[in-house]
Every structure is written in structure tokens, then in C-alpha cells.
Amino acid sequence: MLLCEEYQDLASRNLFREEQLNGPVNMVGPTVHFLFPNVSDPERQLLKGLLHARMGCLITMRPLAPHQAKKMRLATQGKAELERYAKLAEERFMSVKRAVEDSGLMEKLTRVQVEILKKEFFTVPL
Image (cartoon, rainbow, N blue to C red):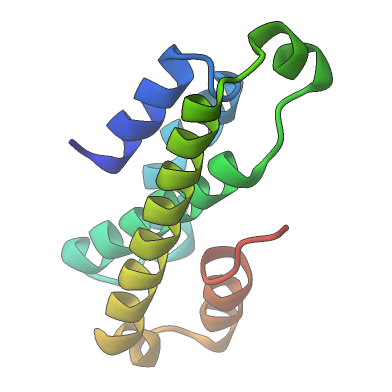
């Protein structure tokens, strides 16, 4: 199962808000292509994977709106499942981040692109 499918599965069972998936996931390709036009397609795919993994971390870390949490009354099993997805998302993010760092991609980027990569791709805001 692909990473995004796992989050779609969580959304379908109301473990987090559906709108957390729709907007950003659809803009990953154009965003990466716009910010990094000077890298090859395989390298762009790696950056897209990094953004998807980052979004997976963000989705599992953000709390539900109070009315949703009250309405859903998550069972212990649901919370455990969400924690499992959060751990999976973090592991995938770190794995893809290491792959980007080890790929030699950073040497091909301009100083501005490196700063964008570090600030917007390599970090997960809390």
C-alpha cells in the first residue's frame, strides 16, 4: 500500500480531517518542478516522495478539531492505530530524507534551493 493510500484509509475512517489530504498532495508535483527545475526526473521523484512523507508526518501529528474528536470518540484501538501510522510516517520521512542527503542532489542545487530544501522539505513543524 502506498503512503498516500494509508492516509486516505485513515481519512475514510475519520481518524483525521479529509481536507488535510486534498490540497497539498495535489500540488506536490508542480511545486517540486517549479522549485527544482534543474534536477533530473528521478531526483524530482525523490523530492516528491520526501514531501509526501513530510505531509504524512504533519497529518498524523495535527490534532482533530474538538467537535470532531467529541463526535468520533476514538476508541483505544483507533488511537493506537493512529500512533502506528504516525510512527510509520516518521520512519518513512527519515528514510527518504537520508536518501536525498546521500543522493548527491544537494551539490546540484543553488544556495537558495538548498535553503528551501532545508526549511520546507527537511523539517516537520510542530
